[in-house]
Image 1 (cartoon, rainbow, N blue to C red):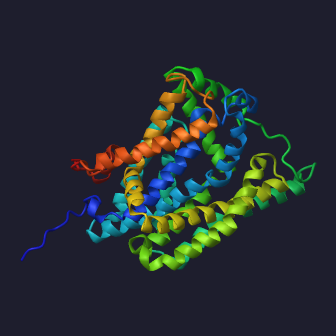
Image 2 (cartoon, rainbow, N blue to C red; image 1 turned 120 degrees about the vertical axis):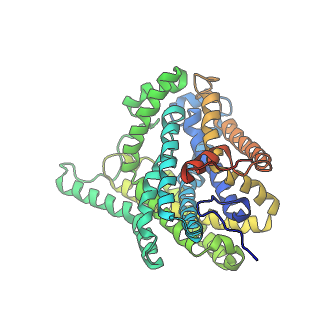
Length: 411
């Protein structure tokens, strides 16, 4: 009897997928949409008084606050965690097939980087893919490291912003003539520095060429902003946590880890939610000159966001184990996460930007948020319909062909 030989460089097939992992990834895509819809729709840029002129104005501030408490940074943290899980799964499966897993993963990251650069310049400036691709290379040295080393580095990276801000604060206390302030001073209400205002105007009413120029300016400024917010070590810390969980094969054996999931959900919520609420109240202090409130904001966010995102992931795992129909719906959206993520930008630009319908800053936040949820619900339906005929989402298909350097059957 002969055994069928699996091609060493074959991509993951549908029968090999982990539905719960895909479903949690789908939920993360929804959360990222709710974060990105604020700048896409213009609500992250227009001054507060402009919101008062819109219908449902009384809903704006409570919704904005809720998004900062429950959504902002939490779903990027969760998506970073899932990226680490995916890295572990990719390395394990490629190695099992006899392929050069590291070489394939490097090519996969280069493909993601190219997609991200096209996205951030030609479509929308709020891209995260290029950042993930660059930081993803730092995961490679950990393939041969012990679990203890991975966990130690993960915790160190997550807590590093606290130590760095404390160091900056200490230097300011020694060398600044004014010493250390307790407050942040003036923080722009709109959060837009003057040199970015022309780019915002191009989003609201400019031509496509002007939008591309604005995208490039915002992308470069975004790198500086993420450095200032110490975003990169936080992402890498979540990558490593996900890598550890992927190594332990937890998503393939959810039933065996029910007690652990319940504990993560409980303690992640009990500790993470109050800290996230405090972080929302302190929002903006860490972007001003070094000050005590900025240090407190950095501390509560560095601890609260990862804990609450892990609580979300654990709670979703528990939910999807019971609600199978819901799991199937979210799993389809998660299996096409890259395609759905890119579609958020394409549709958002078409609706809100001046070169599209021109609704930038003109739609109440309540309607924007409800519309985002409705659009994602439509994506779950379309994703299931597409995957009933195709093996991958369109963007995933292109990405896989780049990774494996051969034509991969789509239908």
